[in-house]
Image (cartoon, rainbow, N blue to C red):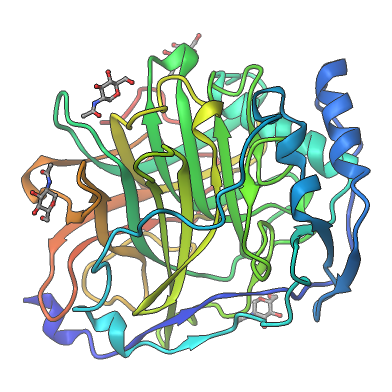
Length: 405
Ligand SMILES: *[C@@H]1O[C@H](CO)[C@@H](O)[C@H](O)[C@H]1NC(C)=O
Ligand SMILES: *[C@@H]1O[C@H](CO)[C@@H](O)[C@H](O)[C@H]1NC(C)=O
Ligand SMILES: *[C@@H]1O[C@H](CO)[C@@H](O)[C@H](O)[C@H]1NC(C)=O
Ligand SMILES: *[C@@H]1O[C@H](CO)[C@@H](O)[C@H](O)[C@H]1NC(C)=O
């Protein structure tokens, strides 16, 4: 078995609020409606109770928890904030190799009590984020190259209540108008009105000002046509954690051939409220709730998901090469120090337990030339490793003439 050669520890990191001061702007190439523009102005005009300039230079505004953008959403006017999920899917990491991992990197200097952190952004960044989301979902192949690789259980009629994985963090340099992610998708509904929660690690200079790895989450209830956005860019996500914000930087990256750093992420449906909680872990015995997407935002995702997908995405304007994904190398099984991977791939079932994916039902999909990006399912590895897949690639001009299975 290959796992016997895995002689490293998957170090776990959390997020630290650090970043470079320099921000590059594009002139918003995207167009937004007046309503969207109003929302953006509202988001940008939130008055902070306190402002933190983090180590790397990111500005974090601490906003009154009851005045956060979510409460500007018409469906959330009378929303009663939930400070904690009713339960957290148990036993997610304790038996694994990850229990020997090191918790590090979460900067504990958070926002004062009663406030929540929002990473300061600009209108250009908001427009660019909106533009990426709509173009990737609405099949604008003439304006945008978008590629993804993913692994997923294909079981007709199965329902899911969350997705969980440990994913590795890598350092890549992107051009201004490229983006790349390592992520999980939680989905329900027909394509034209797909309800979706996406979360994981994103890099995007035109959205975040640099190529650093950052925590992201996005949602929509209609394939990003009218509803949804990235992070806290529009009313939707309810943040409760005072220490960790969307857009914050991961302060550790894997080093090719030497060391792997990773992160536990999960989104799960809380019984009774039906809210979709985001949890993040850097520590084997601690999953920290960050906040939630309220049940009311969704139609098809209100009660459960029909699919959970694990993988990566990369995009760029058409005519331009798409960026690296994962660690920038094609995936491999023989050396986990030299490949991007996800392990402990689990879903949450109806009773709120975390369950390994069914090995025999998993299919991988990729939509680009296999020398651009690829994904391979490794199965259930022993030695504390559970359901694992490897993925990534260098990118380039990746579109294939025909869709690849
Ligand atoms: C995207 O559009 C092209 C051309 O209109 C079409 O052939 C393709 O099937 C569409 N893909 C999806 C995923 O809808
Ligand atoms: C990531 O890349 C940047 C720029 O290439 C470099 O300055 C930084 O040290 C790298 N970090 C790690 C952890 O390799
Ligand atoms: C899943 O959601 C659908 C649509 O909301 C609902 O009809 C169905 O009963 C749900 N199934 C379970 C197992 O919760
Ligand atoms: C959920 O998973 C747990 C643990 O594997 C199992 O005991 C329980 O029966 C499952 N619930 C359902 C509804 O399948």
